Length: 155
Length: 30
Image 1: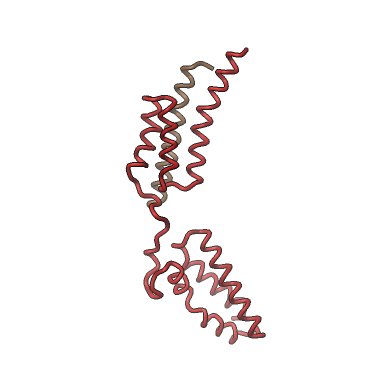
Image 2: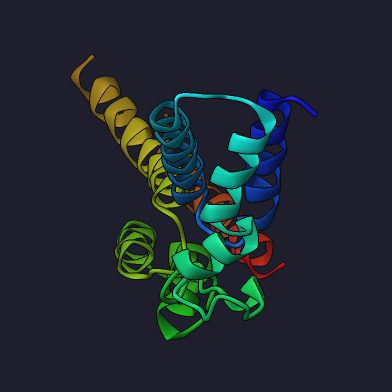
């Protein structure tokens, strides 16, 4: 196995082991480790198999790096990594948001969904992307017909 | 565009939004 193949094998193992980390941190970590390897190799002044193996050995197993990154003990399973503070957890805020967007839209046609959106943004169960999509859908449907009504009246 | 249509569209948007939110929650829990 040549030096580059050893490095890409190592980075592949690191990528596979880092699945519990958030995607942006995974990319960041892979970049950091790659940089570290390159720096160590240029410092050693050689890229032969033995040097590369030594550098990788000094870095430690990819699983250990990920475990260290996740704040766990080096040999602890990485599966217990917390992805976010309350991501995906359903509580009163989430239920209120969904009820206001559905039932609230019938009971309080304009105010209900708007309050629902406030609850959506207060919740940490949804990503910003989902919140933006949902807000755009509701606001588009609330604003466009109002503009249509106003346009019809001015004609 | 009639007022009735507006009041029909708003709950529909709310339901679509709720479906997206529930789907996001279910996907995260898996």
